Image (cartoon, rainbow over all chains, first blue to last red):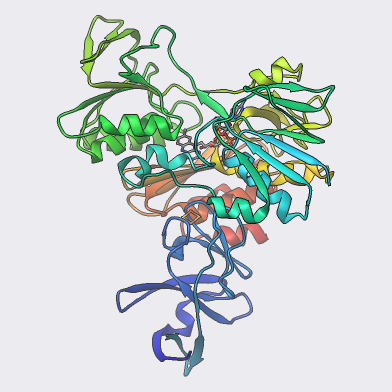
Amino acid sequence: MSGNWIEVCAADEIDEEDVIRFDHGGRTFAVYRSPDDEYFATDGLCTHEHIHLVDGLVMDDIIECPKHNGRFNYKTGQAKGAPVCVNLKTYPVKVEAGSVFIALG
Amino acid sequence: MGSIVIVGAGECGARAAFALREMGYDGKITLIGAEPHLPYERPPLSKDGLSGQLPPKYVADAERYRVAGIEVLTDTPVSAIDRTDKSVTLTDGTSIAYDRLLLATGARARTIAGTDDASRRIRTLRTHADAEEIRRELAPGRKLAIIGGGFIGLELAATARRLGAAVILIEGLTRILSRGVPEDIAAVVAARHRAEGVDLRCSAKIERIDADENCARVVLADGETVDADLVVIGIGAIPNTELAAAAGLAIDNGIAVDATLQTSDSDIYAAGDCCSFPLCHYGDRRVRLEAWRNAQDQGTLVAGNLLGAGEAIASVPWFWSDQYDLTLQIAGLAEGASTTVRRDLSDSAFILFHLDDTGRLLSASGIGPGNAVARDIRLAEMLIAAGKRPDPQALILPETKLKALLAA
Ligand SMILES: Cc1cc2nc3c(=O)[nH]c(=O)nc-3n(C[C@H](O)[C@H](O)[C@H](O)COP(=O)(O)OP(=O)(O)OC[C@H]3O[C@@H](n4cnc5c(N)ncnc54)[C@H](O)[C@@H]3O)c2cc1C
Ligand code: FES
């Protein structure tokens, strides 16, 4: 599962309760910092119309898509109801020496 | 157990059907629609859906209805409601009994009297079938005339330009988007359409529209004529209230419902584009919305109320439109605002906040490329719902985090 760890950014480059975009190997991801200071990562594009989630709103453990407000739990990837019905893929994240890493399988 | 019948298999009816199951209802659900398709999303019909991506974008595939145990009858108009017998009648005479009935009959495109034409060169855009026919005419060398500078006409204009058709858009009022969109934002939209080559005419009155197999001709009041391969009329929508009216339900610019979406018959509810309801946060003013998220929100809420929850609708109206790479989003209603302030997010993205004379935030409307305004509009919606009176000067500064104002 852990595959290879890829460095995303410095841990303080993501605000609390916020999200950034991370592109790697032709794929795009969304990396989150929760209100209680944990880090998470999901696929970057909404499963409804493939809009990037980086412009969305993070509230508690929910990322809301900027396009039509589809909601996902970014910790589990679970789609929280219409218009989104397909879950987001999630990726393991770790913070080491002040940097955020994600594991791409 | 029991039986819930939903008339109208659109966004709202489909959402309600699934929500009933999510809430644990295990009785019979029959979702009845007049169109030949399973419920699909209308917004793409004037946007990307028109330039590609056929068949329609379904709300859910057949398998999901099957798994949820929702019986969907397509191509099946309901012709009458018998409130004494508590049943609906289909056009073939079959009747289906209900314990509770939901009317989610939506709206249809308004048209101009005298333009029913056999040549099919004068059309409206509401259904997938409409979109398919319109799409055939959109190609380089073809000319499209759009009547009405509302959202659907403007989105269609943008899509038609992308497909290479020539476009003239004729608006009767002095500017486009006069209903519900601030002038500054409408001006950005108008400038963009002109830059993309749309021949945009405001204050142009239409005398009549003629059509034959080869061509359509719009005759303007000043005598000018505009020839086109296709004319699309986009002058708003009319709620489908006939069924409810014939059954004696109260109608008031839509099927009249209370805050729980109950009609004047306590076993019958109505939701989505077809109903008018008292709008929370705005003095319970009676409104009818034609908006995709409203159809979803009301569909979800009404499901609970069909099961006896008795919950009042409290969402803030929210709407978006996509034209070219621009997205416009509006939360709330600006009517009654006394102060407007502008927040510039970049050279090409800004938000207008409208406040009333007590300082309460009523509405926010923004425009910009991609999703530039989305997060702030969403937060503005939450500020409105919370009845906040944010400092206008703070709203102006892009560095002010609206999330912080929400907590304040
Ligand atoms: C081209 C287009 C673009 C749009 N773009 C946007 C957008 O960008 N943003 C936005 O917020 N909103 C947009 N909308 C509005 C949005 O699509 C509507 O608000 C939404 O579809 C309303 O859903 P509804 O289920 O209430 O009604 P509808 O979608 O109208 O569905 C009602 C259904 O009921 C059926 N019906 C009616 N009477 C009967 C009967 N007697 N028996 C059986 N069936 C019946 C109709 O055939 C229809 O299929 C757009 C609409 C259109 C047409
Ligand atoms: S694209 Fe994300 S909800 Fe539609």
